[in-house]
Image (cartoon, rainbow, N blue to C red; front, side, top):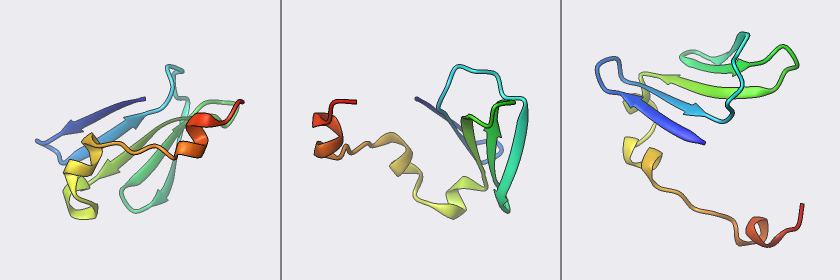
Length: 72
């Protein structure tokens, strides 16, 4: 996962896959999901990001310990 933030346009992008997106689904005003032809999620775009959540949360991470211990 890679996280990008463009301060000039106040947009955040969370890239979840190296796949190339072929479509986009707007799930809410200014929140878009990039998808592949198979419906796989490639990334999440958030416009007007600083108005929707604290930007510092983009650069911190927490993990559920049960997730880290599970064998999948």
